[in-house]
Length: 187
Length: 273
Image (cartoon, rainbow over all chains, first blue to last red; front, side, top):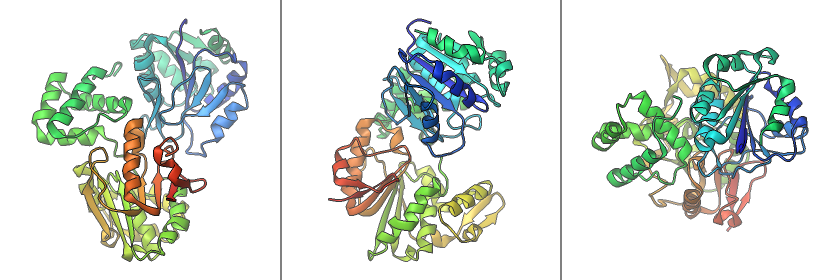
């Protein structure tokens, strides 16, 4: 993919381990932002960004509302809010109903990102036990973006990427080992 | 829905209709959330076309009310963010308790869960008799629900847990009567509440308060509107009064920040001049 303007990664059960393995491999000269939406318990907010930050030299930060989205930064969705992307390439937050029993819902971020970045977007769905993210990937494809999943066979919980594979035309199915390398190949 | 039912241009058309026909100004709202909600309603109500949807909003007053209720977010809960309510209980409300009279403004109160939460704490601190809670929202439909003080029974387990985590020590179930699927909260709790419509976008300051709470409302506004609303709160807050915002909201970017001191570890600011 050439001219990528954003990579959004969604995951649920079993996805944190994947991120912890992939982050150290990532090029520190990243030409786009990475936006991470992970289902998690309503915990102390600094925990997850700090943990991810320990595995990479890229800046990792939890999203602040209305914050401009910058290349080379890894953004983490705050717990208990949906994370949306605005047309002016800033973040906004929303405390509306849970979707797929989840807030943040991966679908919300995938879908709003798709409407902003269109063909310049890649979205990656990792391990998980519900079907959040599947509709989001459909939207990504409808706008001409790239739909990626973790290989369900390599996932701790394969249901989520498997559902995506079943319902969406996926561009790449990636094993854990190949995820980092693939992200580094995106320009 | 693969591609949202309503596009950006159509959102703008609806917003200008609402302003022109009804005087409701949503043009300062963040668009991504608004667009999602409008598209959701369009699909939910099986609108035949954008033209039909638009016509109905303009000509059908009942549908217009539904539209406003559905495009604004009214999700709330009792003692949400228990740590915040613990700070209210342990330090903010006792500090205000030294005043002869306590005036609280709950701006964007939605269906009222926070109003009843605050009322419970005031009662336990023996301050309810000298307090007034002004609970406002732009939406009359949710205010009507708030004034009834009835919430889903299915939520009570969660609310009771929140209550205890926030420092409550009573049996939470003594505050309501179970009535089939609803929990009806004791009338005493609403004896000091005043419900009124107030639109943060277009209405002015209407009183002076010692505590203003507006949690998870500013996130729906763009920066310009956030500035405007924070100015409104500043005008409506007494010296040494407190302003409480949502977990992910701040006054740091605003003009009023220099006159406020943050209560450490909380999204609460005290007006110092």
